Length: 103
Image (cartoon, helix red, strand yellow):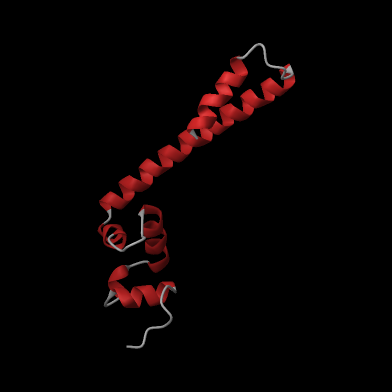
């Protein structure tokens, strides 16, 4: 990301490079779209972080190794009310991340 965000403006501002104007214009439009998508992604990431910080079930899920905010929200939306499970193993079996539940 850093190399791209530095290189593209340099390319667009370089009047001496041999790029045709049409290509520079297309690159400028593409770069603007890229920046817009990066900004939107950052906004969504902040929203996901805020949701997981406010949700106790998400916090418990994120205490598991390898479970971050997005996975916690996905698991919670799949599992629904987590109080229906007596333990984490039951929830994991329901989500399909363990072979089966044998209790």
